[in-house]
Image 1 (cartoon, rainbow, N blue to C red):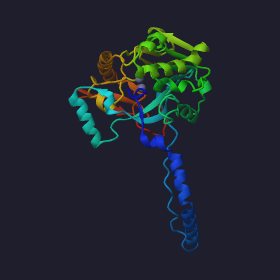
Image 2: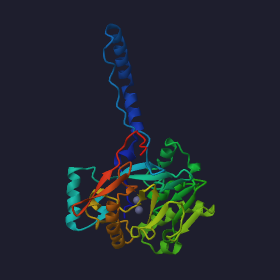
Image 3: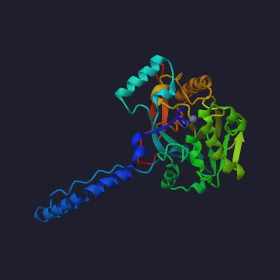
Image 4: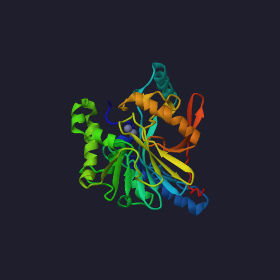
Length: 351
Ligand SMILES: [Zn+2]
Ligand SMILES: [Zn+2]
């Protein structure tokens, strides 16, 4: 199994950051740039309308957050990083996997994925659903969630509750630093008992195949400081943790994989965890599983049950690995489904 679940870092982002690249470019060009600037200034005297020197290109992007309204809830998607899903991480018929490899030649971005967490401000509580990878995966390419949260106007200390869909480190890594400090020191963390019991069990870890060991080690290290502080809570499935939020048990990907459905004023949003990794494959072929699924048969059955309900119910979906802002709706299309993404706007939609 290629390291951690779900996300592979993009080669270029791992090797040199856009900031470092543009800094080098700027250094190299500074002499030329100064000369051009002087020439441009001189030309201003002669011809006031002459163009200035060509601006260097900038490759860094804007802070990663996007928010919208769901009834009375404010939901903010918090970007943690970007990656590419490897086609060999998909399990399907040979015809389907071959068609994916062929389609990738046509569109190399077809399996681009993101890692995203979501903040729900209910007006009473600040609730984070999944926390990104932090520093537990991706060699520094991820771990932007806390910065995205600050850019969105909040501080990690303000988060009251963290709901985690499952304990793969690309969903919980952002909770804890490598030296074992809680990133959200005032938050109570909630996870399904079946999930917690599985990944935090030394006995199960000892019997797991060698290449699955990192999953157990990271889950245990990430949970440890919250357990020590009495901030780690498990649920069976029928409890009320937050008013207006329902637990949706979605087993298969992991034993206690859980979705969280918030309702407000007749509108619904489901945080669906890892129901889908490769949107452009698994919506047309819900039977295709990922090699990270602990129980692939159950994962496919869960997906087959859930997708028609979501398409019928016009439920807004928050999917951590969908392209940012990682929000959208399902539409029935042929024998499968299509994705109607929420598209970025700088407007706050008051509806
Ligand atoms: Zn994942
Ligand atoms: Zn996962």
